[in-house]
Image (tube, rainbow, N blue to C red; front, side):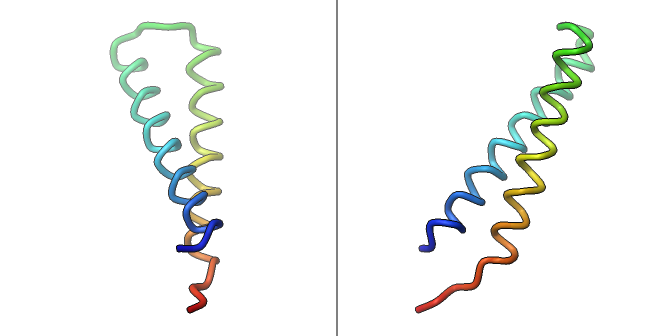
Length: 61
């Protein structure tokens, strides 16, 4: 498996985990708003970067 594709999968999973965590914090009204916004933005960046790495990396056998 390609290293870029593996790194893309890891970034995507970290983004999903961060987005779920941010959603839970918003629903429970726990945590500071600025922390939730920062974690949410970083999670969106990780998720979108991971998806684009997986999508744009070609498999070479």
